[in-house]
Image (cartoon, rainbow, N blue to C red; front, side, top):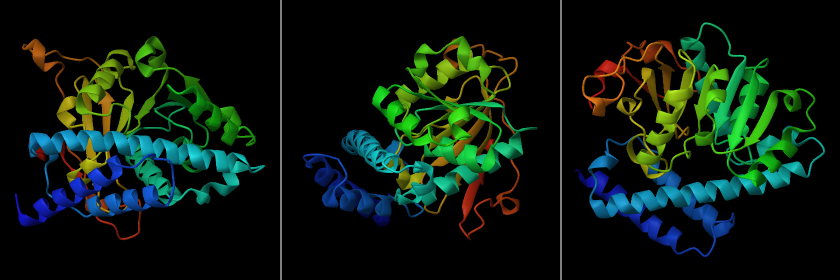
Amino acid sequence: MGVEEELLIEKVMELYDNISRLESLKPCKDVNMLFTELVHACMPESSIDVSKLSKRVQEKRSRLIRLCGEAEGLLESHYSSILSSYANPLDHLSRFPYYDNYLKLSLLEFSILNRNCIRAPSRVAFVGSGPLPLSAIVLASFHLRKTTFHNYDIDPSANSKAVRLVSSDPDLSKRLFFHTTDVMDVTHGLKEYEVIFLAALVGMDREEKNRVVAHLAKYMAPGAILMLRSAHGARAFLYPVIEPNDLRGFEVLSVFHPTDEVINSVIIARKCENPVHALDPGLGSIIFPCKCSEIQAFNPLNHGAIMEELAIEEKPY
């Protein structure tokens, strides 16, 4: 490991210690300052592989991801309440400090989806929508204007706040639905969706996320698309990582690692039409690779950012 990576780990661990000592993770000056510093530290492109870190650092990383998840939920809940105080909440979404990031991430995901689907989906599920379901709102408002979105969250208060945001909009109130349930309890209903988005913080570590993916692989319709958010390099201190070879029962189509202010990587996979089980039962279903196009021909953000697209067969495991 180089000096640069060691300095990064030292910085992230220092920030973790400071964050873990906070009395509350609700938005305030100290919380906002520490998490902004953390994001800025992890944002630059890095070759660091978090899976190779020491056990001590791995344990702190896992706890840090959970703290980030808690803080993100509190931030979204805070701004959802603010937005709901307006007569037309959706006219004021730009008040949320990371709204521009959601615009860029949603455009990225739509562009990836558009390249891999013959037609726009009519029914989409978003798992882990939260109190401020910006991904569904942006996609429904700007990109998938005839699509119905079914949003799943285990927290009833999150769904209650989300409903208030869209209830005054004559279009979105008829196309965005919210279900208070654990997706692990949804079985045959998952076959109704042509595309399922899995939020980055559904499954806070690799094992939890793999259980969710296995459940989706069991019940999604053959040929349906799964869109997953992951993290790469130093950004894996902020979000859980899911690797393409974790997606048993799916054909992994492409992996995208943005290197601008869009933090999450995006993986798109297709549920295998006829899953073929390996001879070794521990391997699960075979993943069929698919050659990707070169990234030079694909820059949906169109603002000079560099984005890395990995061809699956070229990615080392």
